[in-house]
Image 1 (cartoon, rainbow, N blue to C red):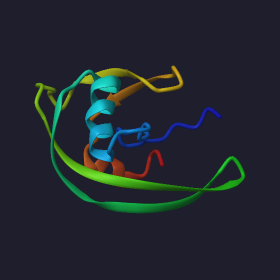
Image 2 (tube, helix red, strand yellow):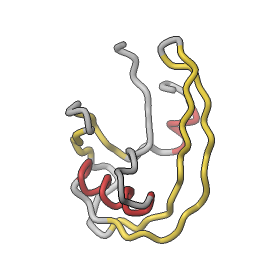
Image 3 (tube, helix red, strand yellow):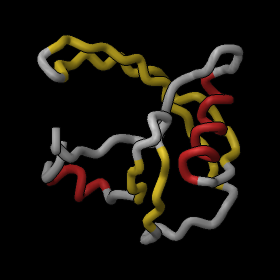
Length: 102
């Protein structure tokens, strides 16, 4: 659609793995970074409209420690499950609050 938006690093849970295992795998696959699972923070129930259709996603949020060095000003290319390339970078909360991108 050409629309640009922010989204948190993440992905789906594959058959036979836990949500915590999926977090560790997704960080490794998408960013090439090793993370250590600390704890689950909670679940968000997100209902939204996308492309004219009502959608719903359940998001489980975890606290992790990044074992590899990643300076906050580093930008990394990452590869989505569908083969699309994206850019990953830390975004300061005040930049998110400005609302330049949804």
